[in-house]
Length: 304
Image 1 (cartoon, one colour):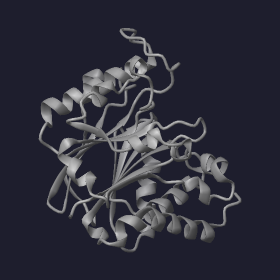
Image 2: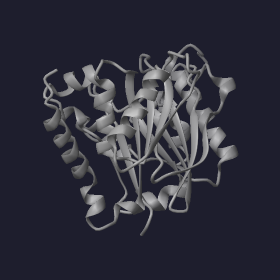
Image 3: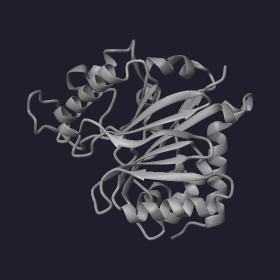
Image 4: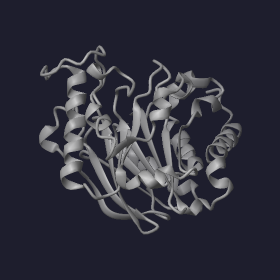
């Protein structure tokens, strides 16, 4: 590995500061909630993945990490232990969907419990529709922060496809993602209509597809109640897209209308973390040791 550890950590610290500089320049960061969605490809990819990822998580220092592709419960527990061993200030807890014996691409949360109250431990929803969700049912956690209750739904939609939506073809990847979006929206509409809901994850499709092929139409067509917080990233240049290997933006964060006002605060921000730039080998080295996806972070400024 070409990475100089001290230089790496210094660079990541600079990255963290640059991301939050605008939001923190005129405001106390203790009044903001930061949520990261991050596909950690086939975790762990290498022998040093746990060590590197623990250091990254501590330096990014978000309140909630929603992860995808966590294939090992044992290694995930090692990651949580490593984070708590290295972090002398904060306390962390981890949750992973699936059984301890599962080697499937499970969903997970890492929560900074020194700042976040967990109202209810994670649970899955829409289990009867697991086929459409590629047997990765949405994973929900209920939290509170500064007297605000939030419900976060972590997802990893079906991958791949040809970019063409074949309606009523249940084996079509795009159709499965479309149905997943519709089921998820219906669940929120019927059960969480007055709650602050944040939908995150690797949704494996692009927001700027044509209407006829767009799997997110159910959300996009209800702009009164839902907003893709990362829409400007998706519509911007590929520089900030979350999947650099095949330039596309696949990792999304959706908020409900109960959060619109908070998100409209100029000090609320969303951004892709360009962690690959702080590896000596760039994206190739980041891909080798961490993931083929970049993390996307949302910071909500809760005080005016």
